[in-house]
Length: 310
Image 1 (tube, one colour):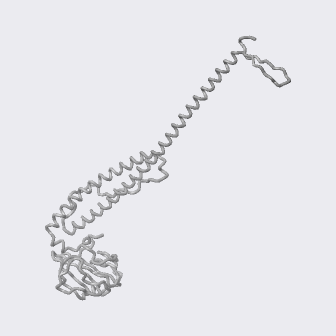
Image 2 (cartoon, rainbow, N blue to C red):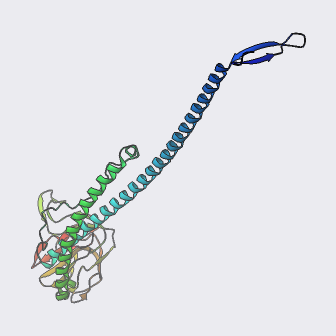
Image 3 (tube, rainbow, N blue to C red):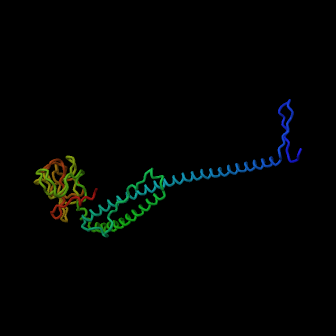
């Protein structure tokens, strides 16, 4: 037997004689080397793919976390945007309130003119669940930039209103009597069926000047004085039916017409909010309502400028 070969004995069965198979040693060595290389390659590939799979799982988890965080941040920004919108609405209401006060007090326009009067901000930013899959970071950044600009506008508006209210506060401290004598509330609760100014007459169909407000209300609803004053008329007047007129001083008077019943008489001193009559349908009237007038130096003016409540 050659030393360069391996002899492999094969026994096919009990009756058959054994067979010898010679295998060169170089084949065995080559086979072993190939097997080791193959096992090494398989092991290395398995380790490589296992690491990549673990990294992929980790990245997917991280992406899912980032999406959740981005979604939460988006929701927080949207809530903040709504708060800015609510604040803007309140500032606009305060601006209207201050304007009415300035009309009443004759203080003129706002103390500092502002170039940009369109202070309404907020509203939807076109956000939806469908757009979530896009770039959330750019979207959130855009929203933050818009909110920043809105906040700068609101800050400017707040500064103007602060100065305005400071002036009004000083005025009211010195004009307490005038304030209590100035109409500033609704005389009764209802809806304005005919405003101040030119209108079509419900009786003749012709254009006529309406010198007050018609406030629709239920028959018998309470009518209240809109400011402190003295009752100078409490009876029937042509066209007004049963009417109450109150002199508030400072050249201001108010009239309450078409009443069904009076609760005050001439000479009575009344306070703002005090019941003075009940809504009726007397005089030149098409149905139950209150005709309310505000007169300044005996000239009718728009009651809208003398009602501070929305």
